[in-house]
Length: 134
Image (cartoon, rainbow, N blue to C red; front, side):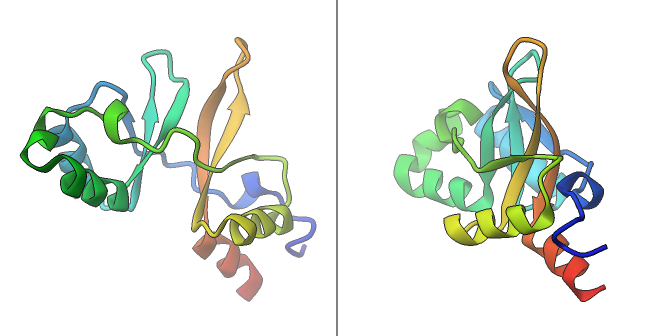
């Protein structure tokens, strides 16, 4: 099965590293050190997808807020509209989206019963490349 038939859900990582929207900057830094990932998914108390915080966002926050960064929360520094995709999309669609938007990851979401989206996985450019190499 090639990239044109294989779905995002078949390849995505189902391990989610999440952080609550009210997490402090210190908790965010600790989460990055513990999880050893390049981005954290930010969620509301009901599990709703609110955005992501990448390591680049952390560095930008340090530059923007200086010493005051330690008073900030995830809500203050997250990227509120990262690129998403649903699990039923093909890898080709995902690769095209990554290329068009110049991103290295897509958050895989599914609609919830209240019309919001809930994160269910992450698809990275490395995941797509791995499938191409097989």
